[in-house]
Image (tube, rainbow, N blue to C red):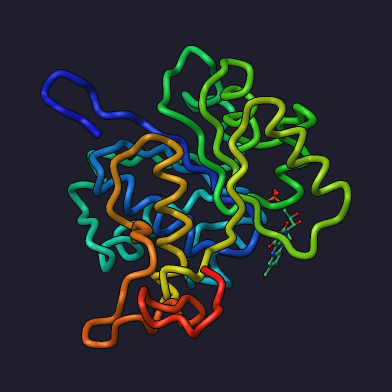
Length: 240
Ligand SMILES: Cc1cc2nc3c(=O)[nH]c(=O)nc-3n(C[C@H](O)[C@H](O)[C@H](O)COP(=O)(O)O)c2cc1C
C-alpha cells in the first residue's frame, strides 16, 4: 500500500460483539502484511466474544488487547517489531483517541465483525464507544466506512439499518463467504470475505482466490460443465 513517496495508510479496525472474530484477525494480519498501519479498538461485548471464539484476552474494555497482540498475531506471521511499529490499540472508552476526531486522517474505518447493535447505533449517529465514534467520524467526513455485519436470520430492522448505512455512504459487506472457489478450510472461507473487503478498500491483496471461470480439471475435460455438451457431440436435434 505504501511506496517511497507515500506515507502508509492507517486504517481503524473496530471489533464488536458479533460472531466472526476470525474475520477481524485475518483483516488485521492482511492490512499489516500490505504495509498499512492499524488502529484497533474492541467493544466491551466484542472482548467477550473474542475471548470465547479465539481465546484472546482483551480485558473488559479492550485495555489488555495491546499486550495480547504478540501472542495472537505472532503465529500468524506478524512479529513484535511490526506490531510495535504499525499498531496502536485503544480501549473502548478512549474517546480521546485520534480516530474520534475528523482532523485525524485515516484510509478508512473497518468494523468487523459488526454486530446488529453497533450497526443500529452507527446508523443512528449514536456514539457510545470509540468504534461507533470512529464510524460516525468516517460518515461525517465522507471517508470510507466498511461495515461487515454478521447475523442470521435478519429482521426487518437489521435490513433497514443496512440499507440506511449504505445510503449514508457506508460499504456493507456481510461476513458471507461464497463457495464457488471450492474452499477446503475455514481460512479459505474467511479469506474469501476479507479479500473482497480489501478489494473494496482498494488495498492490493492476494488473499482470496480470483474467479477465472469454470476451469477444466486436468485430464478430465468437460466434467466441470456436465450440462453443456462439447462442440460436435450434441445428440441429433439438441438445442445449443
Ligand atoms: C457468543 C456470542 C455471539 C454473538 N454473535 C452475534 C452476531 O453474530 N451478531 C450480532 O449482531 N450479535 C451477536 N451477539 C450479541 C452481541 O454481542 C450483543 O448484541 C452486544 O450487545 C453487541 O454489542 P456491541 O455492538 O457494542 O459490540 C453475540 C453474543 C455472543 C455472546
